[in-house]
Amino acid sequence: MTNTTRTFCLTKRSGERRGRTKTTIAALIQLWAMLLVAVFLLSTDVKAQLYTGSVSGVVTDPSGAVIASALISLEDEEKGFSFKSQTDSEGRYLLRQIPPGTYRIRVEAPGFTAERRSGIKLNVNQNISIDVSLTVGITTTTVDVKAQEGLVAKEDAVVGQVVNRKFINDLPLLDRSVLDLAYLAPGVTEVDANCRGCTANNFVSNGSRGSTADVLLDGVSVTNFEQNSGVQVPVYVPSVDSVEEFKVTQSNFSAEFGFSGATLVNAVTRSGGNDFHGSVYEYLRNDKLNANNFFANANGEERQPLRKNNFGFTLGGPVKKNKTFFFFDYQGLRERTYASATAGVPTLRQRAGDFGEICTLRGASFDSAGLCTDPAGQLYDPYSGSFDPELGGPERSRFIPFNNLVTYQSPGSPKLAGTPYQPRAVPGNLIDPVAKKMIQLFPLPTRAAHSLDDLLADNFFAAGTNTGSNNQFSIKIDHRFSERNQLSAKFARRSSVSHSFNCFDCCRGGALSVP
Image 1 (tube, rainbow, N blue to C red):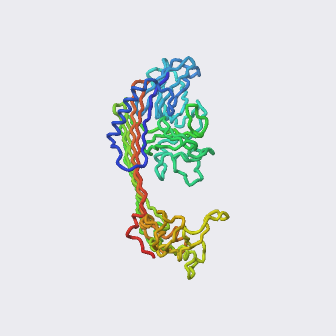
Image 2 (spheres, one colour):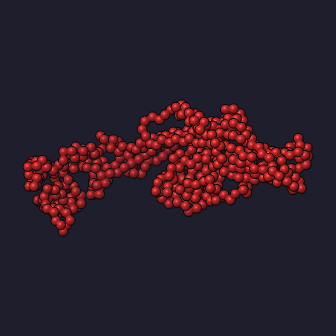
Image 3 (cartoon, rainbow, N blue to C red):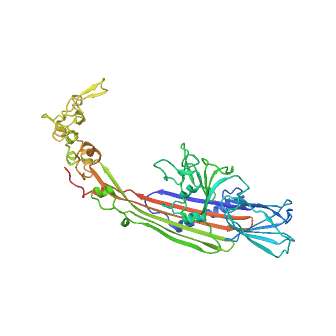
């Protein structure tokens, strides 16, 4: 007997942007509209479900002889969904495309005592075998057996690690990224790069390249393939509290899976049951509990804000018991992090047009004519000199005394006489008026430069706060039309906004006037 599960996942992600996002009500209206269209368009059964499993086995009597036509009933302990089958002439039964969950199985046949086993855990994409031996007895009598955990999957040779809800609940997660638990799988290690963790699947699995594992969410790939790079980036990562379990499969997965560099992360999100369940949480970090940053403290800066609030809630339950269920989750993140920057900015003398510090901060000096004793620290008139083929460029001939553009008057070039490109015959005619205004937009130095390196890259320091916010939610609907037809639909949305601190704005009016 074949059980068919219709599944489609609608996932939407919006990246960094300014402005307001759509309201939850509008998004839900959009969800139901798309679900309605999908139901009408989905006219054929979806036979290959990438996260369902199967239950099979053989039914025998006390002598070991097979029992044909025995009735098999598999029931979801939380939703009440049941799947039925019957043994063939060789006593074998098969229940296919069973969603992950906790089940009880009942086996009965005329002339034998019925047997019921409970607590059967079927993991994502798992194929398990349960053999049952019935005893001769009254048909109305039922023997209850508590199933053992950790059933061996003998139906395939797939190698992988299942991370179930107990792991997800009990193990610590620093940044609450559920796929960090993939490191529990044997052979999974960190990448040896500065970009570790920059994508949720950036790990090395049995020697494979980082960021090549495909990530499935309820049977749908949520990775975006970067062309010509071989890198796959998950565009949506579900919140920790919305994931039921996932499986890290590293070898021998079947041909229905692809788009992977030898590793597959197959995740299933939580569903509602016949009882209402929910949770509310918040995780907090605050700068009041931290010491000051070393560099900020060295520069006399106060401790900057470092605040992180990660909060959310989940709610799941029945719309109609044993028929329709829902599960909704929301997660928000508000983050304020410290940031600092060092740079080289024009000094007061340079803002006025005097670049004598280029010479003196090298340890050189000017002679009586204003020529720097170090040629590398001397400025020359760009209108002077001629092209030297041996040097590969212009031959410098007229230096600017003391590197002071304010007092220097360039004679220009005879070749430009009578054209608008000839500089005016006034002191400071090499100073471009646009550049003169633009240089005033730089912040003032916050400390004196004692070397050329300080002047070029280290006479300005600023500290501030980077801000970021993230909102994501998902809703999952499970509906049972009949024993053979089930609909599972999911809509997820994520939006984020981030702003880096403006080191120029934070220092205007407060910078030191260092000459």
